[in-house]
Image 1 (cartoon, rainbow, N blue to C red):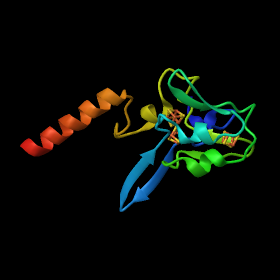
Image 2 (image 1 turned 45 degrees about the vertical axis):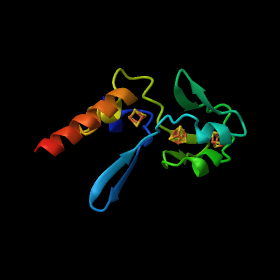
Image 3 (image 1 turned 90 degrees about the vertical axis):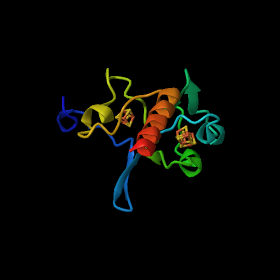
Length: 126
Ligand code: SF4
Ligand code: SF4
Ligand code: SF4
């Protein structure tokens, strides 16, 4: 189902900006250690199974996580903080499926490093 057809409208969880004419998109980097987890006074921002997520029942909306995130990947919602939640109710990431140029793809850090190395090699040899 398309996002605009969903009864409960999805909220943007990825930050998309124009930087010097190019599109730059950033979602949570799951950084470790995580400044947002360390800053959260309510114990709402937690790391579980390698993924940083917000327990919305505990969030008190102090926005400390918003202030400390170095990637601008978390933002204040109406009641609690909003960040990428890794699409827990979907089989595939919605952003990856929606991207028309396949610029987004799921990868582990190791796979992504390999991708960058290959791109750099291709750039050097061309
Ligand atoms: S919200 Fe920001 S600080 Fe927290 S893990 Fe994600 S990128 Fe890192
Ligand atoms: S806004 Fe919520 S998740 Fe963020 S630091 Fe405050 S209590 Fe924690
Ligand atoms: S993985 Fe899901 S929640 Fe995270 S940015 Fe992509 S669509 Fe949004």
